[in-house]
Image (cartoon, rainbow, N blue to C red; front, side, top):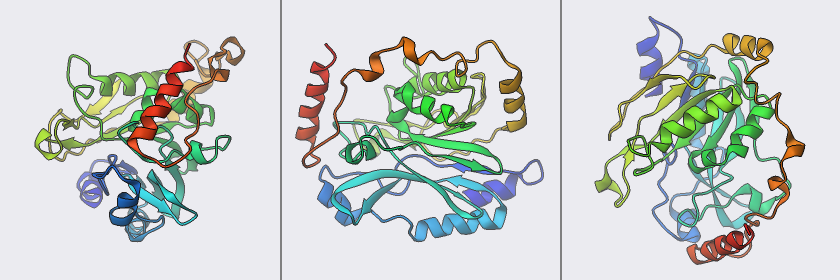
Length: 294
């Protein structure tokens, strides 16, 4: 798909950045970490990353990969939901989903293993500063805010975002959050979503509608919602973004940010996980987080 897109659009413009959806390499069909590690999880780097690297070298592009179920040898009790930014010179950065869709997803958050660590990398590339976050991450404004404060200019969203919250009325959270995160952070958003029918994984269905949004929240291009594979392309003008950031003194929510005015960041929230990753343990942990709201 990447090669066909690059070659097909070559007479019109250069395709330099490509993104793919969440779970494009493996769908977490088991509710058991050991089973996921045994049957679906892979280490990073791997032969798939090598193939991405070959495409990037050949065409001078960058690819935000579909997500992998990742295992690491240093901790045999966890699996991560991971995407990799690959460029012509190889791997630029690795992002592991900080906010799994609990209690359904039993993937480990890097925050669980390292509560004080830095889990939001931004890659400074020849085509701009690129950050990524995965699906449910985007319902937490702090995630993309952290990336924006680190200088991100393009935010990649890899998703398996399903109905009824997907890309269709009356809720259409997909479009809502993509546009809001773009505007509030003055960043481009490149968002890829799974397009699959309900028959493939009932009761959920994935309406696709991958899209590109500019730094003022305008939709530049969007696939028509529905099942099946589609390619969406749009221009990203990093020069225009940088000029706007340099001259704009109104609606500059990064510069106007008042961190001392808000106390919620220091209040107790969802604690780092301990013990085995099971649906029951996650539900108990969520209950503890609910009590901390009061």
